[in-house]
Length: 414
Image (cartoon, rainbow, N blue to C red; front, side, top):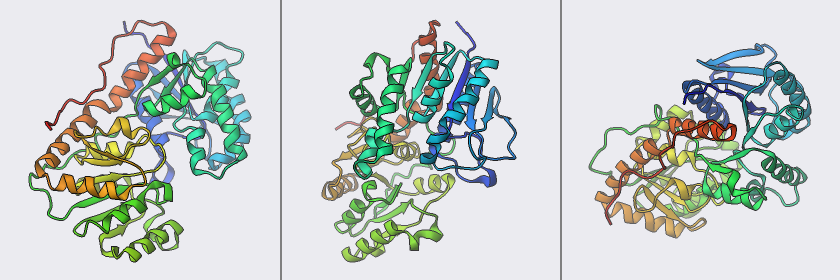
């Protein structure tokens, strides 16, 4: 049965519209935009409610066919850091309530905990089922923050309240689902839907059956200590032929003044691997995609849980991934098929995994094919959209058709 739904996306802190001047939007903004497009493509009417941060922006703007962005004034009409948005939640919620009074959606989908809190307050006087996606959890983030941070404590408490009030909570991976259950949210109201990736941008180059003689390695992500880049630099001391490129941190012009970049540079110098390690700073998504297609292995070695979208982008580019066994990387990388998992903070294990793959070029090439196939078949935005649509249908009591399970479609013999 085809039933059109009126869907409200609530995105207080992640406007999905392109940034003025062509800047790089946040990953959350990209995800909301992609999901909204997919749902509109399924025949639904999607409205994204975002905080207005530009005084010149119209109150309503089309994002794509079937998707419109409504700006809600809350506080100063300028960009505001995420932690400074908390006092603006009440104003944003009041604006939402006025929008919903004029045009009530069938279902609303809140993104991030502040959006969830605003949406709950805005719908107190009307019955609108809410789906919540947290994107990140305070309990996980706290591991990398100073102990006793009051804002972290408040966030954790409110996330539990929001999760228990939502009709459904969407987790990005099984690890996040476990955290949600520990917060007191029933497993029966949690659905795991991995976000999709941009398969038009991240795709393989022509496969070369002869891997390079010197391993070309790439990492993309923060340069902070818990990002695990230091472990990759330490591994280079035992991989004399390897070359590691690290994209992340500030723009290239700011690397010299960045304390994390300086720390990694000093570590490379102490270990005598300066000639093997290249920090290139933050790059555009197109530049990252080009880099991925030019390397042999992708390294993703954070210490704390993460979904690992960047690892999936590497897989979609036909690059095997060696990752730490944390968070969503358990779901992303299939050991022995698309890459390998190693313990966090274990550069010696990372060295062994890299050596094993480069001593077995047949397996390395098989991983490349399997990685690209898994990313394309299991982590497309179309699949994410269909899975999310199915959640909306279930909570509204609309008959649904089954969605195929997410499984690898290529197996590599041992």
